[in-house]
Length: 146
Length: 146
DNA sequence: GTCAATGCAAATCGTTTGCATGAAC
DNA sequence: GTTCATGCAAACGATTTGCATTGAC
Image 1 (tube, each protein chain N blue to C red):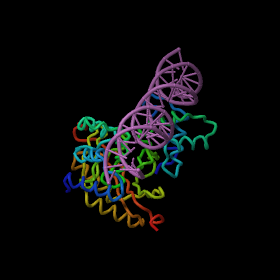
Image 2 (tube, rainbow over the protein chains, first blue to last red):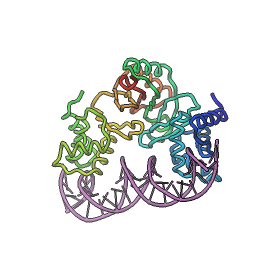
Image 3 (cartoon, chains in turn yellow, red, brown, blue):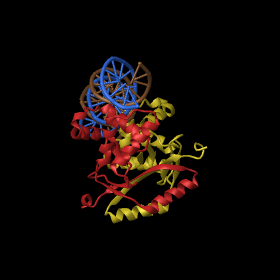
Image 4 (cartoon, rainbow over the protein chains, first blue to last red):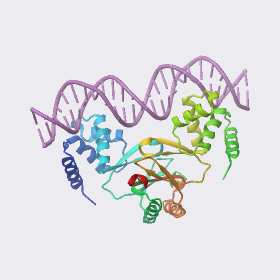
């Protein structure tokens, strides 16, 4: 797994390659997601920045723009969690799927190689070139089913 | 597989059981989704009603309320398709997952028993009681990768 | 007759855009 | 100095809500 500095370096490289400007704001947004233990919505990222980087005076529009940009270059990924809308996570971690408790909102991440293999097979059968996937199992967690 | 009348009967039963009123509008919304070949957004359902049931004079708010209600009682299901927002489908059909072409928007449905089995296994391992799941594979379809 | 459901319009939410300013190169 | 990115506020689209009215029971 990459460490944080390596990911930031990757961002710098991508920005330079595209002839764009490197800004503190994009770095902060990426950093927040790297350090987040959870999946964050745009607004949650914004609030986290106001809390952890109070001197930055970032605007919500910039957060949205940075998130779109970072997703576009695949440094972060987004998932639509049922009713709760789009949430983001850093791509630094290995890919994983989600068990989501519809009662308390708890999210358990998991990875199953067998499923990944079957997905590839299905894609091949349909002449589909898979770029990414998203899988959520909704239900009730141990605590909530008591 | 249920036929349409059975599903409508099911709706009547649920409504009665909950001590609510049976209305034409809820029936129309459910009917539109039963007969739809595609996944429909709230607005698409609304437009379809205006087209196929022009005498009904339904309001968009009612469509939203009916969709929420029908989803709550599991007669329909919603999926968030990437950037395109929430779309609904009748639950009458067997469960299936989705291959989604990010280039042309085409959706291919599939069902894989092996994957379903693995999902159950994972849920069991985490003491999770699965109610539903949602899986999307994003990529490029045959036509678009030419 | 009672109470839930509806239609309409207004309100609200999350997100995007236009524009003048500021920062990176 | 040029161009991209930012902050702010206004705009926007999708969804929800308040309220008076209608319709199911």
